[in-house]
Image 1: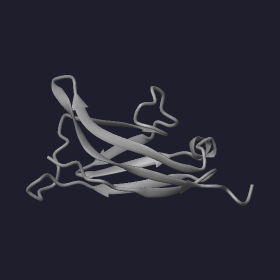
Image 2: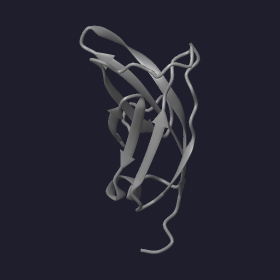
Image 3: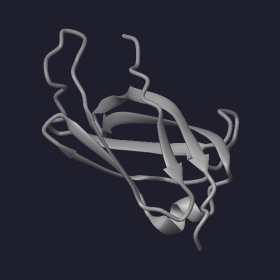
Image 4: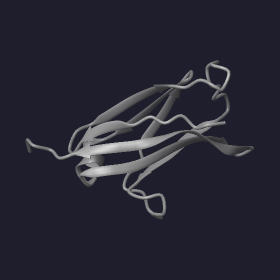
Length: 109
C-alpha cells in the first residue's frame, strides 16, 4: 500500500499542531485498536538521530502531531523529513504517513 504524503510548515519558536484523518486503502477509517503510533523528524533519511520526536495522539482515525515551541526553536531553517507508523508488541510496524516539514525562521523573538 502506498503511504500517504502530508507536507506541512512550522515556524521556529512556535507550537505546531497538525491533525490528520487517516483512512485505509478502501477509504474506511483506519483502525488503531490495540495499536500505538510513533514517528520522528530528521534532516536526512540516513541520519541516526532525529532532530525532534513529536507527541502523537490518536482519536478514532485522527492522528494529531504536536511539537512544542522548544522543539521548533532548535529545528534548523529549511526542510526536514518525517514519517509515522502504527505498531504494537504483537503487530509489525506499518508506515501510515510521511512527508516534508518546511521550517521558516522566527522573526519576532
